[in-house]
Length: 155
Image (cartoon, rainbow, N blue to C red):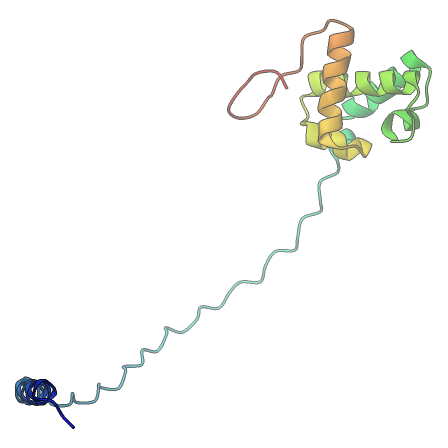
């Protein structure tokens, strides 16, 4: 059984639906879009053949010999083989002192970056920084400075 309240709600609902349908505007369908215009690219220019690649530059030690000279001087001074300085195996005091002095002198006298010194010796660039700092501290020498870009303080 339907109560008078439910009947009134149903009639209001029907009236609301009729108003919405009468007020609803349905626009006409849009015409289809025009086909896209295809623009042809301009003809490609003929490229000249590339020049053959230049021979790679030799490492800095071969360019001017300064790092090799420093290596041999340090090896003679400390009485160790130059291979011990550039190897990662020598951990005795004489080898470490020679290696640290080589790192310091290579940085100060040649101006090569720590990365290039590290590449030539097979070490990490942070090892070169640490070794140069330790040698400077032990012998009361000035710290090597940064050479390129921005801040020009000690390493």
